[in-house]
Length: 500
Image (cartoon, rainbow, N blue to C red; front, side, top):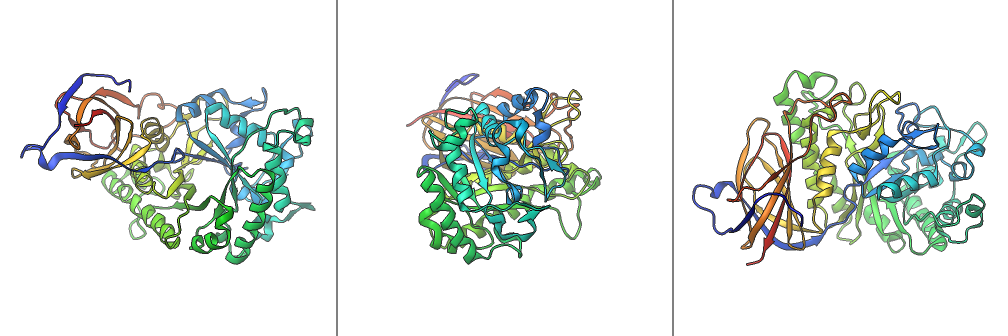
């Protein structure tokens, strides 16, 4: 590990009486393997609602905006998903082939008209450019939602045959249709999702219909490529039955969680209310992870002990207000999301794919990447949630390990890769730092470094100050392995150890 700073070379044993209550104790033995896809992103054309995909694309050069590419490389998502309810009326062939021949389509949910200039090849090209694994959600017979089956005499629903044809177009080395489009090499998409929020709409499929059709889709899609990885819908207590019916044909079960963490009795996060009472805002955001944890546990419990991984393919706060929650641009939201991401790691024995933000857009604050418009008014930048994702994503091990002692005020998870231990630490106290000694079993800490983001919780991010605030600062670990975590900070600690 290339670390900065001083060599520590101190065997960390039993803490003294003075620092016993402020010692972080970590057991370095691996508990379970962590999936690389705990920091995925989700991309969906949002039409008139938010200029997401269209705004990220530069139509003058027929390519992705350079500032979007640069900031996405910094974010380094391990997986990116194309889809959402948008795919309930998406016909994939309209988005492939020569751009001049691609028909426009009505965006039946989000409003407006989609040009289809950005389709399969362009999306997967973005993924490969930034080093992300592509995940595509297919049109699952409109998830049974009749309002998306037809629009202006255009059939918008699609069956298993069409889904299988999409897999073949992407992955068959000799696919004739793709070859006529000038793509000799396979596009290469391993991960596919069948069904999106199928259980959320009473007009959609019921569980038994969805499970039966999932098997139909899975068989057809695997016939096109037996090596693909399939995700089925398992939310709303569907997981157990879906696993029983379709389990042998799929690899993951998906669920979503978009939620408002505000108090119903005394809301403080909506509108501009959060600016009036920083303490109440902080308290509300620091408890948000518990609401999310309840949802994860409910889905886990609905498995009934069945061993099938979970995929949280959409997740973020939905706080009412201008641009859907101005508070999400504050550093308080960044620390809140750090707790949520820590909790994703705690559930990493079963949670294999997860996100905590949409990918990009011009308006919604729940995006990871904000795109100033018009082009030239500013460069794309990372929201607070994405800055925490970026920090954690670049400093994490391959296996989860246990943190047995945690000082009051800190939220900590740990992981390990070879002889390097990684801690993800959120100081949940708005105005008070926490000083703590580090102990990794009976191992010797040879050297270490801390990468931290520390701001006043009320600092708000925009394209005007995006390069000046919420920046990652690297510091060497002190020789005594005691560290002070600043108030309202998020830190990634890297420690090189030698076993006793």
